[in-house]
Length: 404
Image (tube, rainbow, N blue to C red):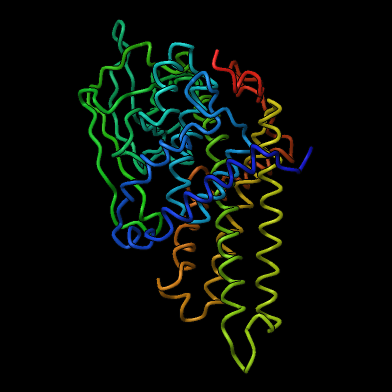
């Protein structure tokens, strides 16, 4: 495993850093206070090619690898988690699912316009009573000839009111002997009759982002919009989470870095007892821990990204990276708030926003408790990965960057 970044990695990283720091950071606090998405974020990300950063060129993307995706997510969340959330749902949960499970026709019809930023994408698994236990979902899909009739409601869906294409997980056989075999995945579009959406208000964090609900009432979805075979929806959903968790973990690395960099700056400037607080040992301890957490979290994410580039199954490695990085982002934010003292308790400084945002990441895309159970089951050999019919493709630079 080579830890050195390529020129392409550095170029993409710098481009996204410039965008986030120069164009979004100056006003992100304002939009966070408004509890509303920055109106220029999605169009600008589309214009810069960020929304298709690791999609093959032949499907409208930029042709970068999975490591690049992690670097992009880190830079986005260094400014605000809402920017990274866009990549988690649009790219990690939807586009990469199409790369793995989509037919050639579906890639041309859905993936290409999404990668070009002409369409925005979301993922809808969670329901009011189904999150950590996806098999208990209540949304249904009944086949009638050449269409499926979808009914149900999804909750806590990022980009719910902004996405054009939504990957929905529903039950096609509620009475299946093995419940996970009765679940199927579909791509629905916002303009389908019977689809309605709304925003969820009053969130603790990720306030400058879109989070909402999606209701489906007798929505007719063509058979050709089914992703994977009937009954494969559980495997589609879980593979989506492998990719979504990767982006969330990478974003958490950016949050830790934000806490570290802001704390270093403040510690050098703030004085007590006649010296900068950076000279006090307990302040140094907080900064040292943040540095340690950043280094360890980034290494775990890079390992998962390297495995993705090799085309190797990475469910365990991605889960542990997401678990550690998000848990440490909360700890780093707590330490950053403490280090900033009373100022950390106000929104005059960014660290209180980092804390509010970080708390969400230990819940969504599989809570920290779920990640712990996953790691224990691997260690106890209660859990072993079985080959999927469709694996996420390994990164091949010649294929990814070829237009043909």
